[in-house]
Length: 84
View 1 (tube, rainbow, N blue to C red):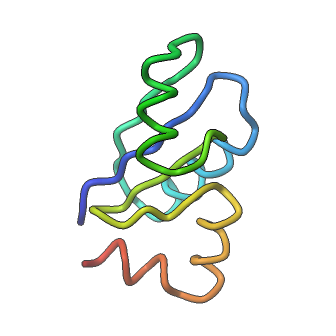
View 2: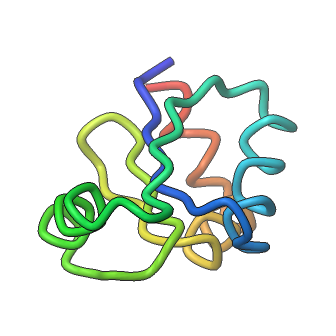
């Protein structure tokens, strides 16, 4: 399974939903909490081209946010990415 990185904040409901989906899929992930850390948040924004959380990478593929992750799941693409 490829490395999964998810940038989050503590009180973000979308972050929680994204992590729950990944857990249901049996996918381990590295969580980077950007709460109160402007340097990490800037790093995330530069890397993603977006400033909102969550921002998710599966391997080298930037998935996007929670809605993007769930959209990939609905099409079956998430399973393909996770098994690569």
